[in-house]
Image (cartoon, rainbow, N blue to C red; front, side, top):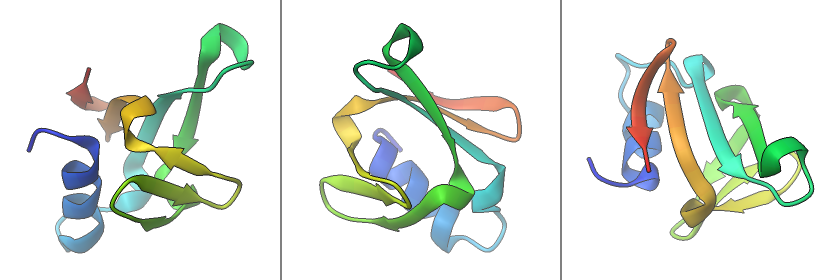
Length: 76
């Protein structure tokens, strides 16, 4: 798996994984260090170009790190 969308879809649809154990780090202009971290339980849906959360859509190109159970599984 090479991109955030594939990784998140695999976690969402594979019964061996728990989406609630995911942390998604992404660029958020104006936040401290231009970085924001959300929990997997905030993810509402995964579209072709955006990850939709309870508060806002996030384009996949802004995601730079995904952590699953305290282990980095994606880093850009």
